Length: 134
Image (cartoon, rainbow, N blue to C red):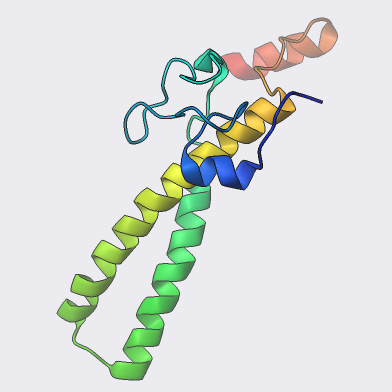
């Protein structure tokens, strides 16, 4: 398949290179580096785009909403206290999950050798191009 040596979860949580699992993936918090400082893998192939965002929204939304509802029905705190508690919790969870899920999607992209699809040729291409033009 590929020369992928680590588990996707381990490299994603640690922010490590998808090939060797040793070098840094990020040069700053969510900014992917140019290449691995351990094995020299060129990170030019990486394009996670907005892929992690829907997963983060669904996971953190479930956790934060569940926590908020549990807190509301169990302790009945005032609304301002709920906001003080759950706004920072949701923000921190979003940042953490975005870091981890971006790393996981990059590792999967490397493992499966995912890349941009090819343009269509022939009669089907005319239909697709016409639909794109509209």
